[in-house]
Length: 212
Image (cartoon, rainbow, N blue to C red):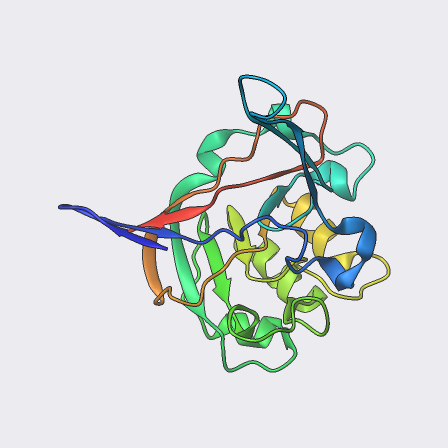
């Protein structure tokens, strides 16, 4: 969704939540369940209940997701996820994002980067989606960036030791997953990706959008 105003454009880069949405590796227990608590046939108001894993769709991870002593959402500084960012187009890649791929980009210390891949165009989110591998994560830690967002349901795909997550978390790099970037052109934007405030939680859904 793109909203035009007199002075700027707003690009919605969030996934819609529904039972049939893509979920990580297609696992049935990760599908959100939406039910009705009450409607106008039983009362004077309409109320809906949502039950879902906090890593569903567009969401932000905190270090507690992979590190036992990591911090949770109440310790998040919002200026780390409401910030300038740069979108990079990596739609030519076929499997993963490596350090060699990232070295070609003009990434600077303190940047929040958003990685656009063919995940935003093809129905591969539940299968062999493009991900950031260990070498790519290690490269970003050396650059000391602020955060990284990706159009995959997980920033890593099948790493048994969660090397990508842990490398990024150990360097206090924010991880934003589940973005939809099909209509986004490479360039600089203002990012708003504040999560729902759930104290003690290791992740939360985000209504993410870019402002140009």
